[in-house]
Image 1 (cartoon, rainbow, N blue to C red):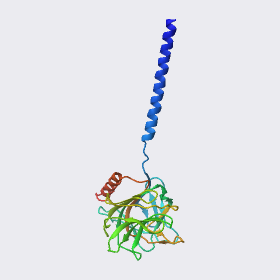
Image 2 (cartoon, rainbow, N blue to C red):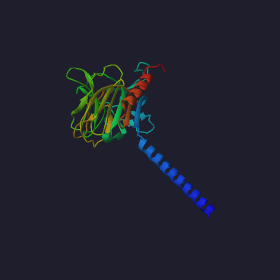
Image 3 (cartoon, rainbow, N blue to C red):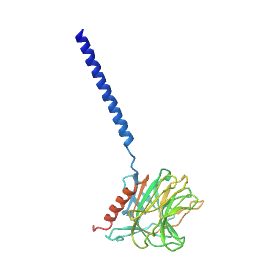
Image 4 (cartoon, rainbow, N blue to C red):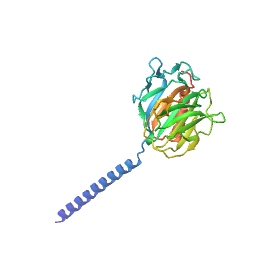
Length: 262
């Protein structure tokens, strides 16, 4: 009888240990799942070294095969062989009719971050030069000559009014790191050379992807206009909103890439 009681006691204890272990395992799994944070995804990375001016194809270095190509009726941007301080190339846009179209657009409804190493060369006839944009129902990220003559970063919403403009002017005829991080409705931050440079807020819904590099389609017929005038050594597009810390690290890395000797 005593043996039976001891056996039952040991069995109960083992079952309790197993139950506690299973509960702890489930608790750990739940804790891990809760603590996981989704990192914004690098969708496209356009480096000038991967651009072919003869075909107008700009290969995506991210591995996602989101290449940009020459749209019908457009003229291919040129390639400057030694554009940056360390002699790296840059894709040069004339501000008139040169632009490219991404093979896969980005619908900005879930937020996006755009980082670019660019050299604006002043205004075109529209005073606004789009770095990346879509049609009338999408975002437009551009540099724009303001009434005081300064060139600033601007983000436009679907009714072609500005969510906001950067605090500091973007230097002309000089390469700078510019960036914008915005959520899915129109709140976000501008960056210049890795540092926050003004915030903006708004509320909008975006139903059209951003397709174009170096132009925007603002009319009802989605006719490209507002062509970028300047050089782009690299353009990165992320799905999601990168943190200020992450943007600062990316800009520091790009600055090193385009300043140190090959």
